[in-house]
Structure formats: C-alpha cells, structure tokens
Amino acid sequence: MRPPLRIAILECDEPIGRTKEKYGSYGNLFQELLSNGASKFAEEEEQEEQKAPAPPPKLEISNFDIVNHPDVYPDLQNFDALLLTGSRYNSFDDDGWILKLVGSRIG
Image 1 (tube, rainbow, N blue to C red):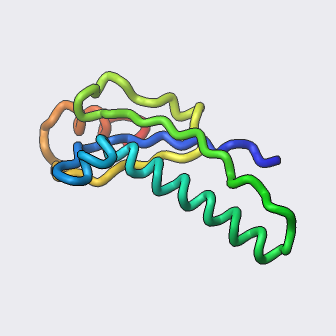
Image 2 (cartoon, rainbow, N blue to C red; image 1 turned 120 degrees about the vertical axis):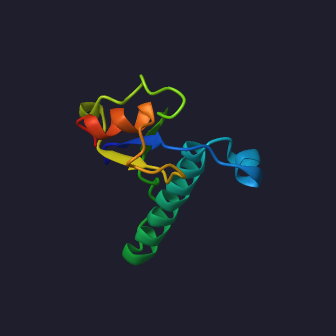
Image 3 (spheres, one colour; image 1 turned 180 degrees about the horizontal axis):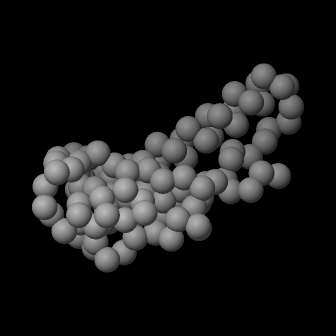
C-alpha cells in the first residue's frame, strides 16, 4: 500500500460569490479537486491493469489561511507537496503576509 501524499495548501486569497458559497475557501476547493483526481487515477489504473478495484491514493491535505493568519505556516518537513492558491494580490506589495512568504524558506 502506498504511503499518503501529504499536501499543504497555502490559501493566498478568499473566494467570492458562488465559489465561496459552495466551498468556503480555496483550500476546500482544491481538496475536492485533488480528491476527485486521485479517485479518477485509481479507476484508470484499474482499467489499464485489469486488476481488482484499488483504493484511490490517500491524500492528507492541510489548509493554511496565510492572508488572515500570517503567523501560521506549515512545517515543510511534514509535507510532500506545497500548493499556493492564486491571488488578487501582487507579489511586490508590502502586505505583511506577502513579505513573510517571500522572506520565508517557502518563498
């Protein structure tokens, strides 16, 4: 059995409108997208190899709202992958969370 893929999602903005109503945050949107992709991957792998159904790859996904909580960043040693959501902000702005991201070991 495969070990879980540990993914940290850095939420660099908040969704608006219907997206916010449906998912609440970009982290939740990406969690659903990645989980659906993992399930689809398992289905295709079964069909190609004509094996008994295999469980989808296990994902351990953690969201970090770095805009509203810039003091909470993931410890990179605890993750295999890092996903930064899109943002309306400019990477050259002087917002505190941007400066911290750019100045961190993540940036």
